[in-house]
Image (cartoon, rainbow, N blue to C red; front, side, top):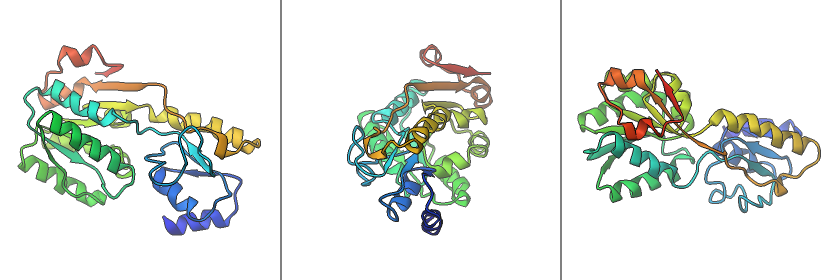
Length: 249
């Protein structure tokens, strides 16, 4: 990524669209003048990408799909789905800057629910199945899949693996449920990227990213795949079904 970022900045474009916060960070290291936007900015203040969400103050802005309290609510869904859950796995690449705040909040939420957490190391696609095997051997009741570039890129594969190992999984993106995943609770990622075009339009017509606030998606979606529930032998409680924004059968 550093080499790609250097190449893109070297082309001197009018605007750089970064895939996520990690890409935005690499681009910002190499330019303070070319506008950079992303539909997946995470932990942007802490990473030094912006001064604040309301007043970015530099050359970076965009949309953040990583909202405070969202991971804790994913842990609550685990408890609602499996009331007796005692151990939950966390699956994601913790070297991804987007993963750290999610992981920390999930660990804190687990303490409140008196749930033990397991998070085997995952850095590459090849690490995923061994990590799931580890979680299976540890008898986790469910897994929460972190919102990272790696897990999103493997969205077609993860639901198959969790079904094979008979582990319920909760995701942050609807895209996983479309591929056969059980439940997702998070923002509409498609909306984030479509709406990013609005920011691109403003910047290309003279607006400064320094004065364009980082935006938050307007709605959090709960999506359930009933086919996946049946395949896992799970009964989805009415409490969860009545809250669902979409049910895929």
